[in-house]
Amino acid sequence: MSFETISAFGPNGAVIHYRPRQDTKLHITADNLYLVDSGGQYKAYLCPTDGTTDVTRTMHYGTPTPMQVEAYTRVLMGAIDLATLVFPEGTGDTDVDILARR
Image (tube, rainbow, N blue to C red; front, side, top):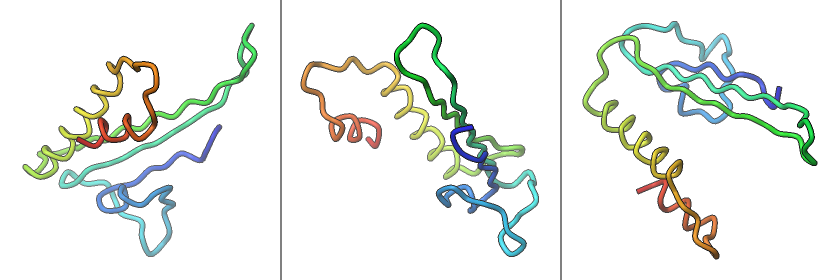
């Protein structure tokens, strides 16, 4: 495991590496977004380096608000842009960051 699984509902999903506590935990309902973020590590076979994974998913169990739809769509568009990006020689990390945030 590369980090503890993050399971956050509503505004807690915006807290980096959120951990539920008695005073912050929320029950999942149909009126907000749920975020789960999980990672793992593996030993590479016939490869000089090991690997780390990180998978994040956001879902809604009800009908999202127009603002939630817009935010989700913008993040999805950024993820698609990054997944299809062809890195020309000399591409820097700030160039990629700008594309992801457009």
